Image (cartoon, rainbow, N blue to C red; front, side):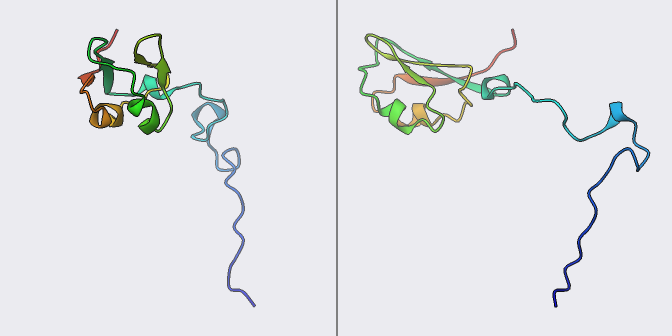
Length: 100
């Protein structure tokens, strides 16, 4: 016989926690990685030869193909810097994100 005991689910109402102070998320949060990133990639279009190495290594696939270069979809970019580290032509630089 198992010694595991089932514990009841936490009910904020029964614990006396007002609904507006409940720490449990009740609404879907539309936040994207670009909303919390601290560094962002900037592509130097003159150096980019469209080799697609950045696209291959990007863990969130935020690299966007343009006619003559790759660009970054900053809504989904999390600022990890892998694209800049892997670019063989050093066409991507990481810069500090600024408010505004």
